[in-house]
Structure formats: C-alpha cells, structure tokens
Amino acid sequence: MDTVTIKIPAAPAYVQVVRLVAAGLASRLKFTIDDIEDLKIAVDEVCAYLTGAQGREGDLHVRFTVTDDRIEITGTGNLAPGQKIRTDLTEFSRVILDTVVDSVTLDSTNGTPAFNLVKNRRT
Image 1 (tube, helix red, strand yellow):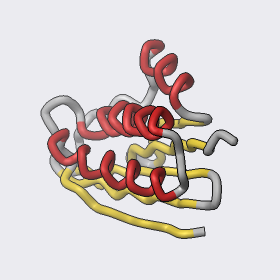
Image 2 (tube, rainbow, N blue to C red):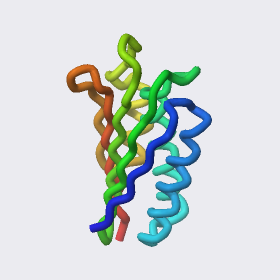
Image 3 (spheres, helix red, strand yellow):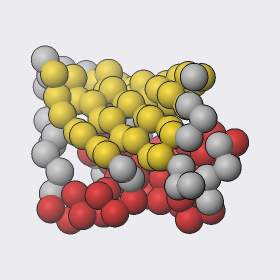
Image 4 (cartoon, one colour):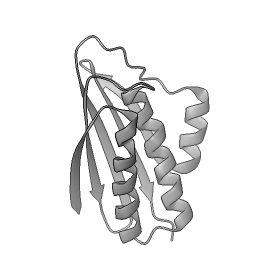
C-alpha cells in the first residue's frame, strides 16, 4: 500500500491538481481510460463541495491510498472558521457519484468538512 498526500488552496482552480494526481495514480494501477475519467469526475464533484464555486479561505489536504487494485481518496478542508459548507450531497450529485465510484461519503466532524471516495479497478 502506498500513500500520496497533497495540500492545495481551497479554490476551484487548484482542483485540477487533485484530478491530475488521481489520474496518474489510477493509470499506474492500470485502470481503464473510462475508469480514470470516472475518477476525475468524482474528484471534481466532491472537491466542489469543499471549495465552493468561488473558493474558500484555507486549504484542502488530500490523501491518496493506493493498493494493487483500488484507490481511496480522502480530502479534508482546513478552512477559516465561520465558512458554511454543505455536507449533504444533492440528489443529482449522489446519482453521479454512485455511477462513477464504488463508494463516497461527504461529512463534517467538529466543523471540519471531509470526503472519502473509493474506486476499485475492474477485472
């Protein structure tokens, strides 16, 4: 099992970095192109909840845990106090995420928003 960790500003412009790392790691695991694209869609969707459309004050800590046939991505928002973050997925987001990844959660613990998603390689 390998772990890769990155920290980005909590702004939509930097979510592309998370997508790039996710795609690179999934490629190393020999995910199909379709599965890599699905993973990138999921990263966009969950990161958008933490960054918001305009960005937020603070940063996101994202951890990628890679095994032989799966990638797990956990993101935590280290955001300035008082910023309101939605942590319940809309029905539309839920449909998208359920289609493209094997599991996903979005929640907040003690005011810290976080997500977790898992994508398994198809055999």
